Amino acid sequence: MGPLDNMPDRDIRLDACRGIALWFVFINHIPGNICSWLTLSHYGFSDTTEVFMFVSGLTCTMAYGHVFRSTGSWATICHTVRRSCEIYAAFLLLTLFLVVAVHWMDAGLADDANVAIVLQQPGEALSRAAILQYRPVNTDVLPTFVLFHLLFAPWLLLLLRWPNATLAASALLYGLVQIYSWNLRGWPTNDWYFNPFAWQFLVTLGGWWVVVGRWRLMSFVTSRPVITLSVAYLIWSLAVTMSWISPALEVAVPRFLKGVIYPIDKSDLDPLRLLHFLALAVCVTNLVPTHWAALRSRVLLGAVRCGENSLEVYCVGVLLSLAAYTFLRTVSDGVLAQVMVSATGITVLIGFATSLTWFSERSSYRFKRFAQFPDDDAA
Image 1 (cartoon, rainbow, N blue to C red):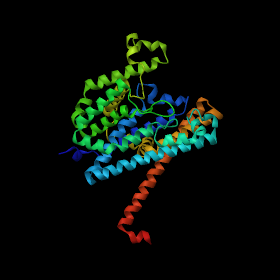
Image 2 (cartoon, rainbow, N blue to C red; image 1 turned 90 degrees about the vertical axis):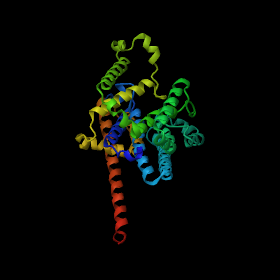
Image 3 (cartoon, rainbow, N blue to C red; image 1 turned 45 degrees about the vertical axis):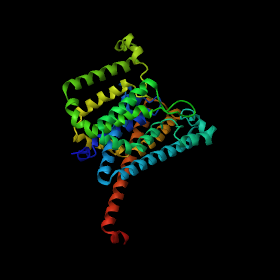
């Protein structure tokens, strides 16, 4: 029995995690937002980006694995390339919308949104955006996903045929990036913020877990020593991050360790961030059952809907965060205003995602009904 015979169906926990991550992304994209203390970024080395990458590896392997099993490799290639094109189109449209939004709402935000160069050199900037070298603020993750989806089909074939060798090759590339800092060039300065040579490892790890890891390592992940080590690492990570704002906790990082662990780089997925995410994943796996009733509650159902429509919700969230920041700059930046715009933005995202799901289900129902009774619909 091959890996495709045991490919799991969509796990609602993954959509819930991705939806909550989208809420956190929206909140963190509002500069100076006190509600960011509700997100992961203040309580450990990793944040929502690691969740996104790993969950993407899981969900894409499940989805495209089913396509490969039912219709073959050519259909899989077509699906992955089409999704890559959708993300590419979303990135270009979001870039244009950000430029228009800044021009319309507050031209003083041009530097903060990294669109001033578009206003100064529109032809060069847009041509560089077309080849994924230029990216406005908060859009950096989209070009990385464009590449991942474009290459996902051959990667999936390798993972299904030689899962352990593929994971080893991915880990080797990740390790070489830590040593040699390989990256893709950006424009006008700097490299890609989310280095695809580094972040591919989390995507590969997610895919490997679906194909073989869950069968071989689940007993290890749920063992008491692993849970204990994971909790201990999370506590130490919390103490270290708190020491950045509280000198009293600097003892969490002895002097001889500071030169070793700092800087904890996000662009190249620092090993400390990777370990923190894995520890967090171990704890979530053990604490949240597959059929947890709370996942069907009204609040978490909103997160599930956002996770189901992650690309659209992410793009709308970027625009909403810009609108929220403009409101805080021009109207009020008090604590109550920050809480209000954060809650309002999440509510809008839930409503938007729920509408997308409703329209999708409605369209699917109409298509099936027409396929069964074409004359009725035509009438």
